[in-house]
Structures are given as structure tokens and as C-alpha cells.
Image (cartoon, rainbow, N blue to C red; front, side, top):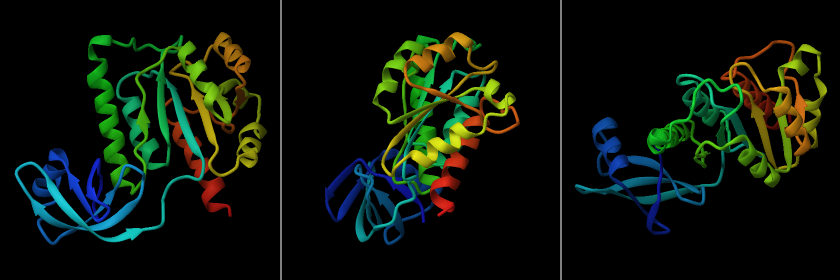
Length: 249
């Protein structure tokens, strides 16, 4: 059943979907009155709904049954990525959303080859957020991850103060055979806590960046014996977190 995130509700029993979702319902899914969809309200509550009315501007759907279960990870994971080349960040956002990431924070790292262009900023962030929304709908999430406007390294460090646990994936730790920090960090986390984990761009994080991260309470960790690409490491991490919290028990 197709899922839609709804910004507006007429009442607790009726939702209104805007023009973009209307187009998808009508032109892509070829649905009409009487067909059923899943609507997720701004608080993350989802319900099976029946399409009641389609106008030139919107779709109205009535709640048939509220759904109690959720597909969200029990901990909130923020993926912090040094701006990579090409469309790698789009891949991280799309697949990371499918794997349960709570939030994405791009940042300008020393070794980021891509330089952030302010003129294209708004459209870029809007596109990233749309990718997250569509991936959240596809993977039946109850939460659309927020994709932040790219931060400077110092801004990212300031933001990190709000998190319960902070890690930085560092390839030198993998080379040295470090295997305990990531695992023990997950074991120490409780339901509802937040984790920020930083990944460098192509070329990784510099020694100076690692030093500053440690000053702000980050622990460096390896992700196994293999060196992973900048777009692979966040997905490996989210998969491992999902296994630890959702499958081991």
C-alpha cells in the first residue's frame, strides 16, 4: 500500500494531501476514490485511509484504521558526511533513509573536492530533502529524515553537543585492527538516545580534524578490516546498527 506523509489534517479522521501527492496518486498510481493508501501525520502516526475526494488541487482521505506499529530504529542516528563528489551524497541520503537514518548533516571537510556553491544551495537541499521523503515513503518509515544545509566543520562540532553519543569513522583505526569501540558504543546505548557518526569525504578525515573531533567528545572507531568508500561506510554502519538493535534480540 502506497504511503504518503501528510502536512495537513482536517480532523483526527480525515487527511488532506497536497498537489505533489495528488499528482502521484492520480497520474502515477492511477488511484481514485475508494482506493486505500497509508497516511503519516506530522507526529509520525500512520493510518490506513480511503480516498474520499480528488479535486483539482488536493486529495481528501478518510481514516479507516490507525496503525500502532513503527519501523523506526530504536535509537536516532545522525549521519554526518564530508561533502563527496558527484551524486554520492544523494545515494547516501536515499539508501541511508531506507536503512533508518534519522538525520543527515553534510559538512565541508578539508579534503572535500567539491566546493559548496551558495547560488545552487537552496535547490540542492530541496532535492536532497525530496530524495529523503520519497525513500521514507518507499521503505514505510514514520519519519522523514531532515537533510541539513551543509555546515562548516566548526558548525558541525557545535551541533554535536546535543547528542548522547558521538563517533567518527577513521580508516587508520580499521588498518590498526580496532574492532571494539563501535560495538561497545552500541551496547551502551538505550532506546531513544541519539548517535552522531562522522564520515570523511574521499581521502578521509585529516589528523587535525580527528584531533578537534576528540576535543568535542568524539571517539574514533574502525568499521572492520576493509577500507570502505565514503558512500559505503554510512550504509554499512546503519546496517550494523539495525542488526544490533532489531535482529540480535
